[in-house]
Image (tube, rainbow, N blue to C red; front, side, top):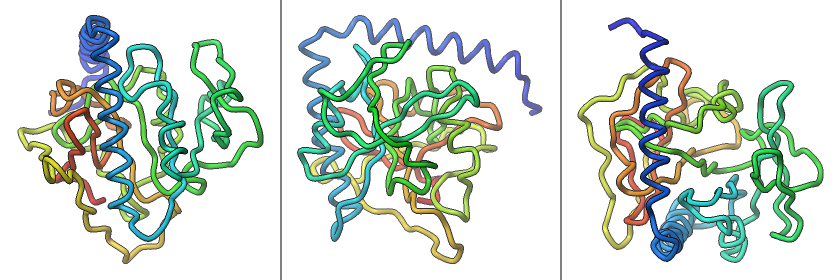
Length: 243
């Protein structure tokens, strides 16, 4: 079926409004509980994905009510990982990446997102081993619904199958399900095709609440897909992904 941009935009707007409304209803104590669980699952998954090294992790500072918690970078740093965070740039509309050196060194931008200061580290695909993205929802094949700014889509537009880990963005969501690799030990490193040279970045994951996983996400051809979703219940690999 041909892609209808207007219908897709309307469907995305409706789903974004629904998810944002639902997130606002989550009590602060429950939000904190979920965030601690997400952080534990993420740290465990990183340890299994990179058993013999400490990768550089591109992460984010969650906004109030957003899964993962504003202290996600600190949790990763305390676990022994080097963390880099995005800095929003409007001309061109992309993200720069800078090293996280502590909560005290973060400055809020015009959207209230906490950002680090310091030197621009260059392209994400060359600065980090794994990227952890915020999301509003994830489709059955990992299609990501973001906030609508398009920053991550533009930043990772050149990251395609064969180069590394990004699944095809042309696939429409289907009835295929993401499945937890294990309830207690929830991540198994998927196969990575090494026949093609690629950038440093090996995996793109996203954080959502469990109810936001495997929903029908309206997608445009340029929309980013991820290889795994991290929720308060575990880490879920999307079987259509090449990572």
